[in-house]
Amino acid sequence: MIGVNPFRPTAGAEPPQLIGRAGILDEFRYGLRIRSGAPGLLTIFTGARGIGKTVMLGEAEDAALTHGWMVVSETATRGFLGRIGEAMRAAAEEQGQGPAGRRITGIGAAGFSITTQLPPEQQAGWRQVGEKLLRQLDENGTGLVITLDEIHGADRDELAQLAASVQHYIRDGLPIALLFAGLPAAVSDLLNEGVATFLRRADRIDLHAAAIDEVENSFADIFAVWDTPLDPVLIRAAAESTGGYPFLIQLIGYHLWQVAESTDRPLGAEDVDLALSAAHRRNARVVIEAALSAVSPKDLDFLRAMAEDDIPATAADIGRRLGDKKNTVGNYRARLIAAGLIQPAGHGRVDFAIPGLREHLRTR
Ligand SMILES: Nc1ncnc2c1ncn2[C@@H]1O[C@H](COP(=O)(O)OP(=O)(O)O)[C@@H](O)[C@H]1O
Ligand SMILES: [Mg+2]
Image 1 (cartoon, protein in one colour):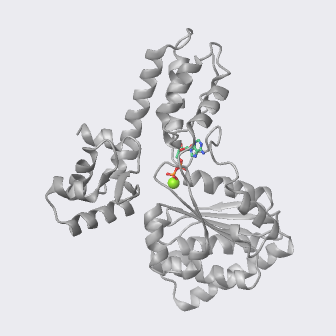
Image 2 (cartoon, rainbow, N blue to C red):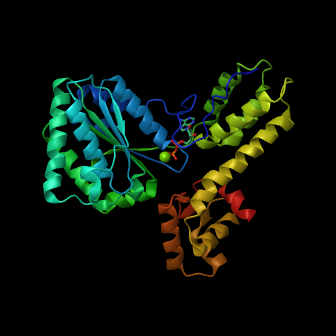
Image 3 (tube, rainbow, N blue to C red):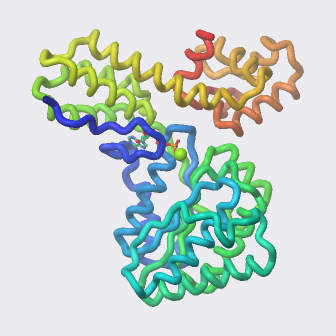
């Protein structure tokens, strides 16, 4: 008997321990006390798939709720502006009836969300609704946090309208925070396009893999409840196998736990290998295949040419392997960076942005 598996290898699910994220929300928390115009109240989280962006938005939401703030949580699929407006309207109506500190999600498609681009009179409505709610919250000494996930796919018009309204609220000294999350290169494009210059002032927090030592400590801590302890050498091996990558941390922890559940004897190296390969297979299925499903055959050729190297490849190497001209290679490079599959690795080289992608490409 070792208890219920605490690992959560699912998109957006809160992990048993938040590894390698100390201090990241400090500025945001500080902003919650200032309530208006503090830099941390406008923040964008960027990072590869599975790095933990959605989880960070959730952490920020929890911090806000603890401070008594209201939270509207949305994903940037078509119509998000209307859904946010609808959530704010419902909240404004309810304000005064109950305590603040509520999370509102998935409010239905009525009213505001009929069209993507709000007609001028509804835009004014959106702004008034928000203002009313924010003034009520301000009187209570709290505020409103809007989180918007997957911002890389956002409709530019909707985003520009959201930014314009929020900027207006900030100018009025109203208590609002806006937190985004998205893939790094796509977010850079979005900011450079000048959709809303005001968003360029946001605090940009690029999330990276955690340090292996921290993963090791966390595994040791979590597995300490087992009746038969796991050999520290094997704990270290498991931690290294995660590469510090949050989704793999969850997958590997989850599969180790399952193997441990199935036996009473202490786990050996073969048991750990079994768990690791199951975890990596699932990572390939969930993250890699999902990411590859959106790429063209030409993109795939580019990626395969990259995978011939054990180290980050240069554009020249890739061009030579593909027999393509420099500018075509540059185009694919840019597209794949924007798609979050590869990332610049300095000196004109590119590396894979998802762990296991190189190995996966070699075996297909
Ligand atoms: N700091 C962390 N430490 C451990 N596990 C994490 C951490 N952040 C996220 N995870 C786990 O990683 C997985 C992916 O997180 P998610 O927030 O969905 O990533 P993203 O939104 O960047 O694709 C989830 O299973 C989550 O529980
Ligand atoms: Mg996410």
